[in-house]
Length: 78
Image (tube, rainbow, N blue to C red):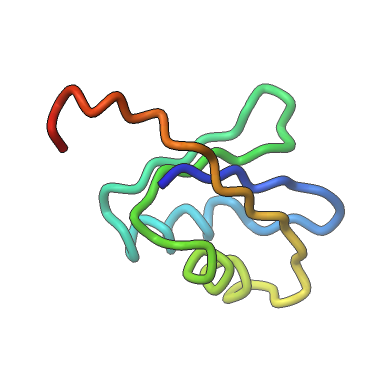
C-alpha cells in the first residue's frame, strides 16, 4: 500500500520513524516530497500499524495518514 503522511505542526523524528518502519517492514520505501510537508510511504503495513510506529517516539505527534490509490498495473503479476 502507498500512503502519504501529511506533516503539520509537531512532526516526528523522520530518521527514527524510518528506522522503525524498516524494522517492521524491510521492503518499505519512504521519501519526502519537494515541499517537505508530505512523506510518501510504500509498505505492507496498514494505517494503524503506521500510527503505532509514529507514536512510539512522541505520542503527541499528530499526523494525517492518507491511503493512496493503487498505481499497480498488474503487469508483473505480483
